[in-house]
Image 1 (cartoon, rainbow over the protein chains, first blue to last red):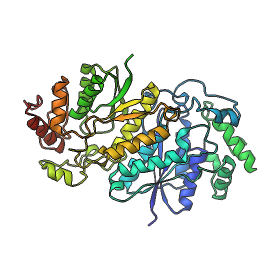
Image 2: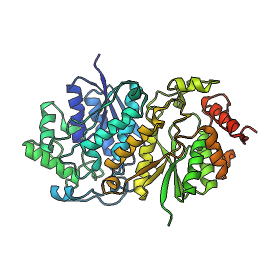
Image 3: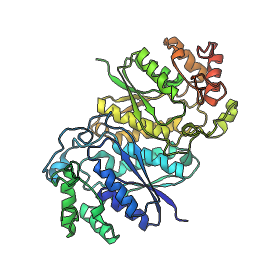
Length: 226
Length: 226
């Protein structure tokens, strides 16, 4: 019986590639997504398509209202930055930063992993093209793992959790290449922070620009932009 | 202007006493409670009463559905243990353990603290009468703090978070005494895991028994049991 792994799935390029990596490593995937009041709710549709198409054993969408907590352009009607260069993105933590988001999401992934009896959790964070998010760095992931093993029944009883970050040191181009090798269908995914009402990507926010750069450098065509 | 502190408030004896301690230390209190699918929802009413009566600046109730995640008697219809001695409670992690609950709650408290510009978070965990919960121990709190400061914009920029656990080494009797000294009205609070439909405590679950022992050893009368 293949071991279970919880995979944090936003339906974007990175988390979808991460799901494919978890499956390639032989895990049964339990995908978890978050309905957190994000303005780009279309990503939950993408997560559903990805989980369904790629054969996740279960797909759990947890409602957690971060909109009431405030302080991010991703959970408000504030404009998201457009047309920035990668250098500009790297210079500071952007307004699209959601306070403690990965901590909240990993905590809920941890709770589900413990309930399922799984010891493995996958998250598609990336420190290279990380756009200034502090909760995408290896030292943060290590600290989370330590905390998780001290604060759970499973951890205390010796069934230690492992947080897998298979993309953490890859460039966007390397992520795209890895996904294509693993047969990922990127037409199922969604990356834009500020999609049109019909779900089409804006092609100007940080997330769209990083995605475009990744496909371009990988010498591949993004099925979303034709 | 008094500094802001986020206080995790369940409406029980411990968190209410913690709120009083935070105020006595001069903080403006921002109370946060969680509607997480608990069977004892009456605790949210208690939290509302406490926050209102004690003058919290704001009281945020975050919905986060831990019931879908499963694996606890507190979020299911499974029976909770009754009539146990303190020694029996201490022997093992009980079925009322909710996977990673304090990690999920502290993460959301951290997110709100960051959004508010607060550096101080109070949680009423207790390692002495801790009933076997791993996420109530000092080493867990230390690990959480380290993770929080690596994974947030505020932490990275040098506005370090502090997690305050004023009750961590107190007995239940010492907690009751401290609260009474600070003028806490314990008739506002609620502790039972399995209250009657009218909200009355069962007086037999671990939480009721620890509370009764605390009042008894403090030589005080619990206003809830008359």
